[in-house]
Image (cartoon, rainbow, N blue to C red):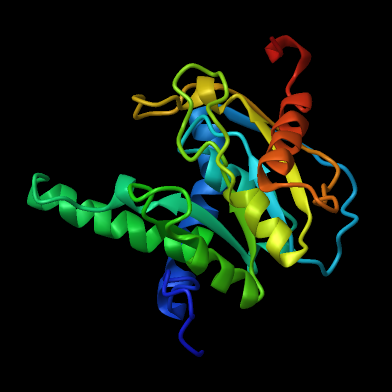
Length: 235
């Protein structure tokens, strides 16, 4: 396979993919009953067959990425890259030798199992867009969390413009996704899942309108995700 122009490690080499996806499949099958987590998918019919797209979702928990990814249609998982923060996973000199080893192992696992493209968020929201453009040009769909980090309060953080900008430039639809329940099952600071239900709702695809700015499109995406929240969670 030719080297990716994006240089984001997507896809991982085939031995890593085989091992990581096997481990993820085992965790997916046995993890839900062991942890007492019930996942309910409410998705509208897929009207985008054969079309690249950008999934844009709210973000509560480290569980968000694997749960949304695994509930995508199987035929789309192999061609969907998920975007994560390199600064969160990267080993640091201050970490113990074991933690540095563990973080490298986690990076291999998420790249191999979830096609995670790790980007550096420290330099700003536009610093890595050129590499994400390259992924899309190579045929990838993307799963992006426009908030860029997990919400600690359950309230939405400011939406970054990257998802809208990528969709506008490539003429791709944005599928709004709301995930609810992971903020209770595995919130930030909790190391073992709590029992609970996670609901996922997909909205209708959105396209950038003629003359619409990335900021305006981002606001529509944000509103569409908010409209998918359960009635009890709406402010």
